[in-house]
Length: 220
Ligand code: ADP
Image (cartoon, rainbow, N blue to C red; front, side, top):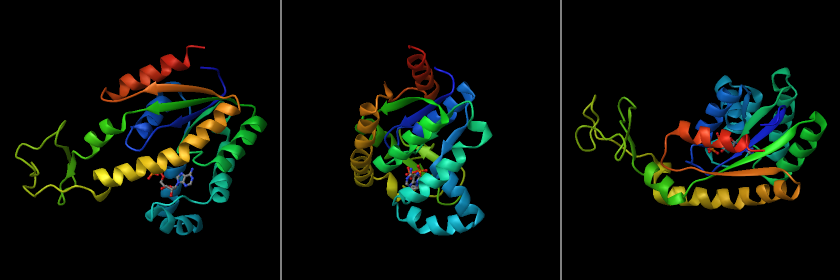
């Protein structure tokens, strides 16, 4: 990959994008900037900003472009970003993409977009099989990591439960929202001449996908 790059990572909910961001940051020795993590930290610390965004996040809505842009701008000016960085969860709207474009121009960063393509049915299959123990919080997957006894926690013997947002209908709504928000952002970057690398993910190990992404990044 070209040094001093901004790597912009996109992928639908449940695609493992967050995991890839962590693995890539590690492999490429770049800081990972996740707007979701930044906001969650503020909520946890009870800052003024945290109090402002808490209700918005709980309602599953987007924080205003103005606020997100301000946060990202000051973060990208930190010294650890001088040699490049990975953006995870930003930009999510065209106004965010426009600001970022100007900012990267000013910071003199080359740009590459990585778009993870994962079949929505594969994601639904994996996520709807998730269960957890309401007592100890242990997580299971009915397909890939089933409990010893059907639907019962190995440790606690309690009946396993499914998270509300792991249900198929909820997931389909999130994909719809993702398509609506993200496709225009990707179009913006294509039109602005960014290199957009599409990588197909799915059932393999996360490390395999990281290797595939790195190979594609090294192609040019
Ligand atoms: P999720 O998959 O729940 O959207 P994230 O960790 O990416 O997870 O973000 C958590 C929340 O933080 C979002 O639901 C939204 O309220 C806020 N947020 C994160 N990034 C952005 C962004 N780029 N623009 C607007 N809101 C954001």
